[in-house]
Every structure is written in C-alpha cells, then in structure tokens.
Length: 304
Image 1 (cartoon, rainbow, N blue to C red):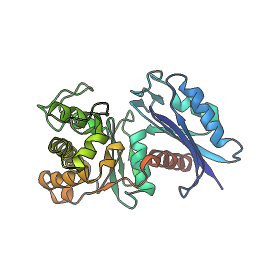
Image 2 (cartoon, one colour):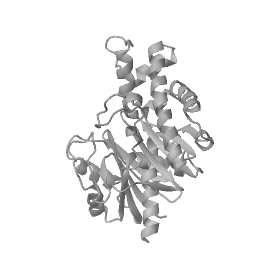
Image 3 (cartoon, rainbow, N blue to C red):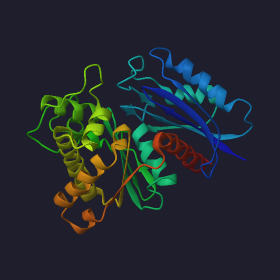
Image 4 (tube, rainbow, N blue to C red):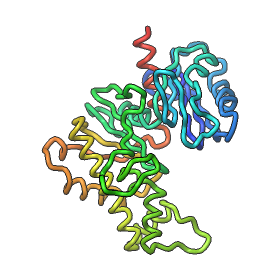
C-alpha cells in the first residue's frame, strides 16, 4: 500500500509518520527538538520512520513559522538556529521525494478538516491556542496558504485598535489577550496568586477558574471575548462554517468554551456569522501531522 511521509516540526518536538490515503498511520516516532543541529535530529527521525519502506509518494512538512513558501524556508521563533532555513529542499534532498511545506497551524486546520472535528465542513478555521495563537484556513477543502505561506495568522488580528502593544509590533492582537502566557500575565497583574513554588501558568489558571476564583474566571472571559471577536471577523470575511480550537489552552475546557460561546452570541450579528459552529479539536497533537500527510497526498496527486 502506498504511503506518504508526514513531518511536524515545532520548537518542542519533532514528529514523523507514514500515512496511507485513508489517514491510517503505519509507523511513527517523535523526539525533542534540540537547540542546535535540528536537521541532524530530523534526518535521524525520518530515517527511523521511513527505513525499509518500499514506496513513498511524497513528503509533507508542517513547520512553525514564519515561513517563505516561494523559497521553501522557515524561521521558527522558538528555533533560533533556523533562520531562513531551506527545510523543504533539505527534506527533498534527504528523501528523494516530492516535498511540500506549510505552516504548522495550517496543517492543524487541514488535519482537523480531513480526519477530525471539522470533517465534512465546507470551510474551516483552525485555531491553536497555546504559548502563542496560530491559525489556518481550509476553504472548500483546500488550505489557504497565501502568497508567502502565512495566511491564517489570526493570532495577530487586531481586536482592539487602542489595545496593548504586541510582541509582533502590532497593537491589540488576539494573542495579547488570549494566549496562555498572556492569560496568566493579566491575571497576575490583577491579583491572582499561586502557592509559592507553583508555576503561574495557564494550566494553574484554568484549575483556579474551574474552582470559581474570580480573577481566573475574569481572565478566561477576557481572553474568550478576544477570540470571539477574531472568529466573528474571520467568519464575516471568509464565510467559514466551522471553527476548531486546539492547543494546550483548549484543555481548559468549559472555562474557555462557555464564555467563548456567550461572547460569540454577543458579538456575532449576521446570520451566516452566527451559524458558525465552534468545536474542540478531536485529534489534539496528531492534527498537524495528519494535515502534513493530507498536504503530501494532495501534492502527489497534482504532481502525478
């Protein structure tokens, strides 16, 4: 049976898998992302997964960005040893396979559309709420990558033009209100306290919000409202029918999704915007790898 090679590259871990046309994984492996010499670790990982496989159709790569599709290069924020790194050509040279590249959040969206919570939807927005906020769009079953490959960067949509300055250089970005570190930052500045020695992170904040701690609850309500503004704006611009939310902060569950539903009900006006369905990811950490596999399958068909 023919398979493709799927690769997911992030600042924390590297993952690779062999995936058939139905989305079934025959072999997979992961390893931590090293601080330096990432390509050597990736080459070892690919060799471990693909060794002895007689027929592979193509390779699909999902990688943290920003990236440049025209050049096939990436400059992941959390991987300082890669700046303008030609990952597409390096994987193509290593494997001898036709190779295609997209952002990790775009692959997340494509994976959820193919096999996960967005399966069957005509158009989908995937949102990864974690240390930062990433996003990807799948329109009529096709990932919208954009001229440079950075389309769907919804974490840096402005939801408050008079809001806080963002690390990206913009102002009032969703990420500044809704990412895990920024949820915790706002809560700490407004009186939230954690026991000495305990991490003051989004996981602890979610635990306290679930217990009804007022500042923690307010932090999630504030973050959810920013997410709702972004979702409503994206739906108005693209007419997506589904939104799938993943990433570590989505594990907060009801303390995020309940205020998000309320905020969407308040900010969404037009009927087609109000009709958008928001779901939590069902693939979790496997979504980006699934999307990279779908990317490779689509590329192999178009090239063949």
